[in-house]
Length: 325
Image (tube, rainbow, N blue to C red):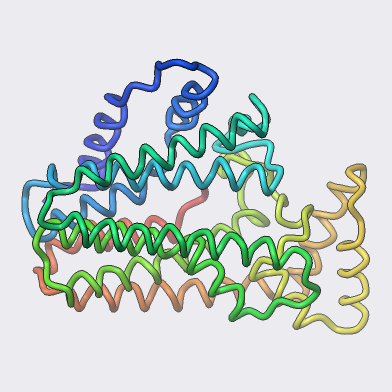
């Protein structure tokens, strides 16, 4: 069995071989820039790790894995425009370094390139993988739309938020695992258990992101702490704070939600975080994260390969839950 580090080296090596030094430079240079930022490469790693559960040779799943990584990065380009985010992985976002039009168009090319890579999936599994990927891609767009809709809604329920992050984040992890497993010849039951593992890890992963945005370290997190607070993003923390708040604390919280002047940014982050601490929403979020992590581990246990083979996926899941970035 290959370790996560060995899998990551394969992915990095393969990504480095893709040539983005093409014309027009204004279209392709931003793609090379985004991919040079690195990142965790979780999605392609999951594809190859799932494949490796059922066969030693992961090469048949490499193009599929690369396609999923390109697609994920494409969504980040468009997300950053919608969120007006200035920083991604400690570097200026594409729309800040270039402009909105460049980020849109370069993102479009990345999406096309992702399909071109996935089209190189071994013929026996090509239709299955393409169908699953296309369904997943549409679901990610649905999740993004819910996220946008929530910005203008006064009330968002916790279960609505969880469904949004399932679509926006978790389904691509599930897709990555299921594709890798099926390419290696796994049965549908094992592939589905791995998909469910991905869904639950994805939900826990996003809740961890919510926590890190408020309680993380800016240097290791790679973007400004409190960004969700400043743009009133309906995170699991804010949703529960609004539900748990007393009349007095709710009034104070709503007052801060109505302040958008940048000169109050630091004070807003400090004050809203203090309210979160008083209401205990950090613990609520951590408990829910642990619940999804526990379900993910149970899904992995059902996969019909030896415990030794599953250890790397267990280790990765544990790292994702204890990360600081």
